[in-house]
Image (cartoon, rainbow, N blue to C red):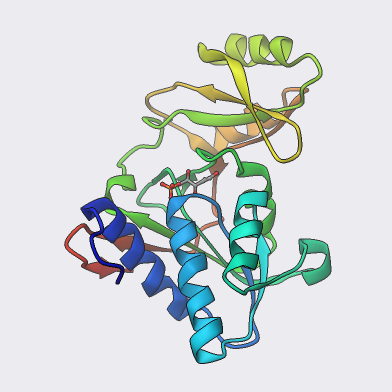
Length: 224
Ligand code: 5RP
């Protein structure tokens, strides 16, 4: 373990390290985005370098692609890999049904496509991401730039007020608007409703996609 980690980074690191157990030689692996996923990429890079692990990585953002190459992981596109054995990614929130809010790092579209194209999705998270009900974390919604203010107004009319007028720009050149809902009573229904609004590309609710959560604690404990 790297020296001098804060408790939160230690929790992220131990979860990422433990999740490498899901990766076997020859696998095609979806690589998530965010600070926890970055630990995973570094841990896998070490296994590639020191233990001769042979894997093919499909990154979920340009940031992750850069890091994966830097640590020596062979990177291909999803189209080249076609299907993945496992995707390992962070999350902003997860509940008891393993439903998630993701996309706090602005990469939800690629993350959802890659996770859905995988036999298994494993989430790595520190214990602070565990919630009873999703929604305290602002739900990211990716919208096309054309008419985005109108799309945002439509989403607002359908749901509640959105915050912010300067959207984050994704790798696809789309915009992210954040939905401050506080509590999402029916995540499945909300996800369907959001994705029916013209201009909405995808939302950060991951329903029935995650298979396991590896939880890290600040004292270095880890559980699956
Ligand atoms: C990026 C994501 C991240 O996985 C999520 O935001 C968690 O990030 P972190 O590991 O930095 O807490 O969904 O789009």
